[in-house]
Amino acid sequence: MDVLKRNNVKVIGQGKTPMLLAHGYGCDQNMWRYITPAFINDYQIILFDHVGFGQSDVSGYTPARYQSLQAYADDILEICAALHLQDVVFVGHSVSAMLGILAAIKAPDLFQNLILITPSPCYINEPGYTGGFAEADINGLLDSLDSNYLTWAAAIAPVIMGNADRPELGAELVKSFCQSNQEIARNFAHLTFRSDNRADLKKLLKKSLILQCQEDVIAPLEVGQYMHDNLSGSTLVTLNATGHCPNLSAPDQTIKAIKNFLADDTVNL
Image (tube, rainbow, N blue to C red; front, side):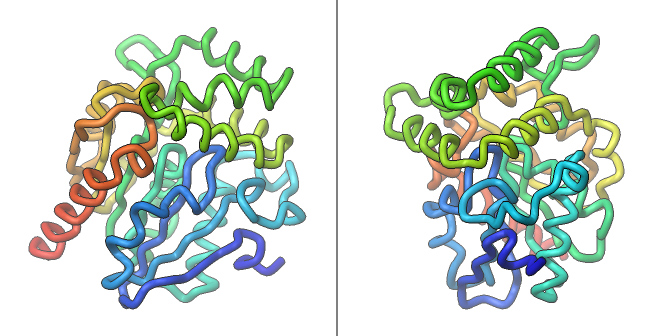
């Protein structure tokens, strides 16, 4: 399998330092279109689609391979290997933030730092931990998804996006969800919402930026604080924004926070 074809990899930009952007659940690389212009002159930007989403090659998918989030993290490492990347600045949204962490744990020398946009290591509440959802809520969400994916997508996407006063954003996410491969999207949802990567956080040895929104039903404020408390060398920035996708709803704030982090990291080095 041609890795670059499998993941519909696109490389743009005039810089030398690679910046790899990984989209969240149900999305594709088009979700970065408001972010990339701010970095295109200074970075080599790598965009891709997770298998089953966007214009990826679904012939590269088998349930046996993609039975854990680590498999998607391994795809990221394969993309880096195919392009001979080094000192990568990784930018991951939602579940892809955790995929970046898993990839950087497995191949720490490959990455320079990680930018984690609305990440969550575990979505289910437990004693002493607030993930945002009771286990019964997650079970109900996944049961609804399994019974009718398109109906579920139309209902959940605007909730994930937030910003009810800007319905076009929710509509875009609905469209993206509905264009995904339904079988793969269902399997990926189960992996995502039942994941628990809290124990992995302390294994990450790279500097990271955690970007969070003031109101986010998927990754509430407590989650961002937990990430910050358990990721050594992390910086936590809470954006004056709502919803789970600030790369679409608040791109200027997102860009500013990323640039500030990268500038400070360069000084520290």
